Structures are given as C-alpha cells and as structure tokens.
Amino acid sequence: MGTMKIAAVVDEENYVTPLEYGSSIMLIDDETKEIKEYENPGYGSPYGGKERCMAGILSLKPDAILVKEGFLCPGSYHMSLGKMKYIPVEEEKLEDILKNLEKIKENAREELEFEMFRE
Image 1 (cartoon, rainbow, N blue to C red):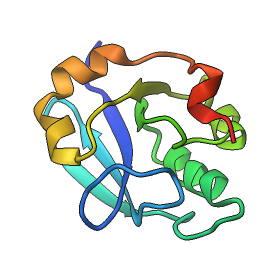
Image 2 (image 1 turned 90 degrees about the horizontal axis):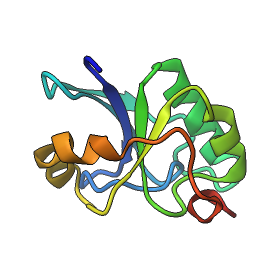
Image 3 (image 1 turned 60 degrees about the vertical axis):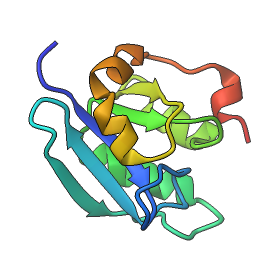
Image 4 (image 1 turned 180 degrees about the vertical axis):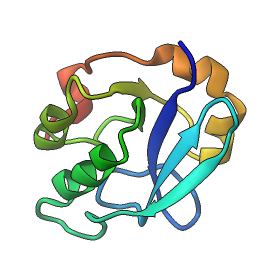
C-alpha cells in the first residue's frame, strides 16, 4: 500500500476530537511517524465548523482520517467521501494511536455507517 498520510484533529492535550473542537490538524506519515501540525480553520465554530475543518483537511490531501462516532457530520462526511478513507479508533490520545498505528490503519474503510456521522 505504501506510505499513508493520516489526518487527525486534536486538542491542546493531544486527544482526538470532533472536527470543530480541536485546535490542530495533525498529518501523520505512517512510515516515518513524522507529524506535521496545521491550524484547524473550523476550530471553535459551532456552525459550519466541521465543514470548514474538513475543507482544511482535504487541502492537505491525506489518505485517511481518524474518526470516532460524532467526529463528522453529514456535510463533512459527504465532502470527503471518495477522497480519503476513514479509520475508526477506540483510543482517545494521539500517542496511544501512534503506538498501535500499524494495527489501527488496517481498519481503514471507504465508507462509514450512518451512526458514525449523523447529527
């Protein structure tokens, strides 16, 4: 499969968060484990924040994004559908995700169940 670039939205404590709640978008290179940090354009916006964040994520051209239930909304999900894969995670902290990245990325999928992104 080659190198994957995986996006994650995190807060100051490096917990993964819904799209509009994290101040940073992290782009993780799964091979080198190098992480680049970008400002989240949707941070703190209750209206349209998820879509603004997703536009920012899409501009970074990641291969996949880490998600939990409620991280995406229908709008941000449909914006990204077919442009990247989704990786559901159980872990809360980015460092725990990085430790298990090899296993976690095996969960990458093209689509999500409706429960994952409903309003």
